[in-house]
Length: 92
Ligand SMILES: [Zn+2]
Image (tube, rainbow, N blue to C red; front, top):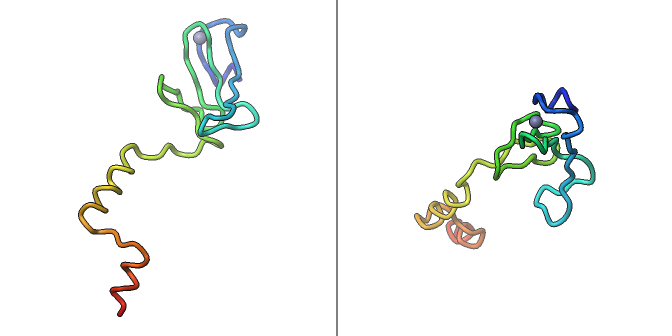
């Protein structure tokens, strides 16, 4: 774990973090390794260095591209997306 964190601080500063409820990526076990001295944070599975507003997804899954919800809404607004009912209408 210390090797994974890879910071110069004493090992006693290392904390293993578990995300409890209601964290969106809650996991019953360690999700990240954190140094309380230099504040470096590393994902348990991915080994990614985590920034302030970032966190480790369960099993190191790739983070969702930011803005996909906006892109989806834009497509809806343009009328590019049909609901199932609308799609059935096109078949008549
Ligand atoms: Zn450190």
